Length: 361
Image (cartoon, rainbow, N blue to C red):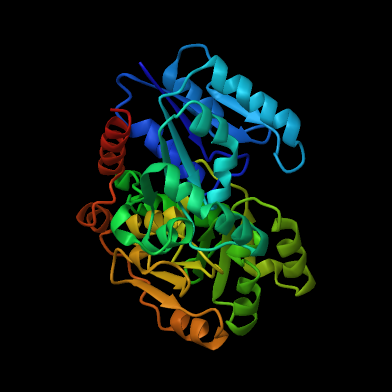
């Protein structure tokens, strides 16, 4: 049995967490055992993933933030690596600095390292930390993975030949459009048939830029309503801004949904005005549902699996308004788009399993 340590889960559901969950669900687990190192207290998908193994053991290991608790966290990490020897470390991250939690295993135990980059940029301090650890990651990674070219360049630099692009695979069948789901969700939230729903799924955080929807709403007539689904640090502030602008009747703000596929069917346009992204899984899911897409021009163009995906600069509110108003909101065959572009989760899982096996030779 080969033991693999995966880093990247957290307490807030996002693209990285969804990717890891999908991978573990669909990968061939024969001969493999997984543990999950989490910085925090309670991870999303802990119960679901533990149930996949059905061995009575909690596969999640929690440590405190090293910036605030360096010595105690460092001690716990050493104890972890010494008590359960790992054959591979697989770090899913938006910054190269995340490798600090695995330095003992990498340097003292010579455990092979795979780093998988999932974002193209970061805030000021995250970018500084990322740049400090770029050389370290390039030196120690036996495989350098990324969800897009931009995400790969961020963590590993511009040597594209060394980077393996791993599609953020999804179960296309799960996200196929359903008129029944559309009717159910819109009825539940009081959305009439003549309303155009601009939908968004994502963590409420500064880089996701959800407050941009408020500015759009001010310029669009009341034929348009906004449905934003997710949790995160900036959620309460965004809700306050909506209320302060007397727009609460135009916004539907919902928590993370385990049946998110039903909500894509209720939307007419999917939008992401992010300040930066790698290759967002939610945009892949939305295309599987046959949704027309409008993304910030900072998002990787590799996200466009269909010709109904458009990139617009967030520097121009008027361009976004125009893009929304002229958008063809008819549905297309999303499942075929996913399959044709090899974004099916089974293909991703098979690809990663092969990389795991080669790294542990």
